[in-house]
Amino acid sequence: MRLLIAVLLVACTNPSSLDGVVATPAASPALQCRGPIAFTTTPALTGTTTSPLRPTNTFSIVARDPMTGDLGVAVQSHWFSVGSLVSWAEPGVGAIATQSFAEPSYGPKGLALMRDGAPAADAMNQLVALDKLKDARQLGFVDARGTAATFTGARCIAHAGGYAGDGFAVQANLMANDRVVPAMRRAWETSQGDLAERLLVVLEAAQEAGGDIRGCQSAAILVVSGTRTPNAWEGRKLDLRVEDHVAPLVELRRLTHLARAYDLLNRGDALLEKGDVVGANEAYAAAGRLEPDHVEMAYWQGITWASRGNYVRAAPLLKKAFTADPAWIELVRRMPAAGLLPDGAAAEKAIEAGRR
Image (cartoon, rainbow, N blue to C red):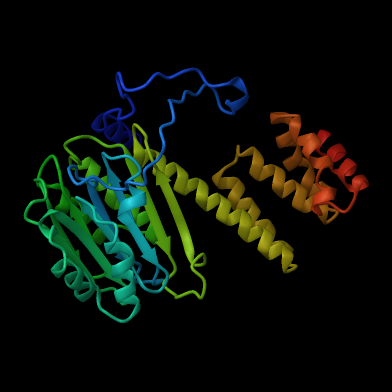
């Protein structure tokens, strides 16, 4: 892992300098939660999502997990906020990457076609046939049945290409060499773990093989359930973006690791609500093993146990929070009004337990 991080850091240039564009006055200390920050002037947003002159994406994968049916898409680029343009997925329907000179409408339109029963290749081909600028597009589609398709227009900047296999499609443009797409294919076919892990491995393999000739700037991963859901906000298992970073894949893996810990924390809460104390404790413990130094996770676990009168379990968790920042003590006193502790007496007991 240390070697991989070094490779990613060396391969990527710092995309954040905009010399001579705007001044950067110091931010107010009141806004500095985690050290100094700076911000620029604030011109009005126009809503322009893509540029007709510049390619948006570097490399991506769309895939279906053959074990769970989960669907996902992951991407890295030397372009700001690549995930907001490239990544599309719908539970039980499919996943899409639309890139190069990206046309975002391929996302919702492609998902609508697959939702109505069109296989991935048919959905993609129908849209490409209507696109006057298809030669500048690059696409990856996968449907809920695991059929996949990829398309690389003739005007995509070299090295550019893709591969569609059983349940996945990889595609890349602006590559430093022609080894990236084969490396992505091998990484998918030999990787293990859940869908999120395998998607990350593919992106890392692409970067290790040479990646984008320009370097890197942003990355994203989106994983949804393989089962259709009645509501649009349900069924998203992972939805993370690194908008601007010197090593976006390193940061994306860190965020995915953190997301797994929060997922376990939420699972523990759900189990405790059902009365499954043993299961809840196992989930909480697993979250703690993933993020042993995470203060907020410790605090909310402590409050959850204290709300049930179990101050013995609450004590070490609250102590960790109180030691990190006494402000957490004051927050405990605000819990009864929010219905998260029974009353003021319970809050004081929780504070006493955490101070031992």
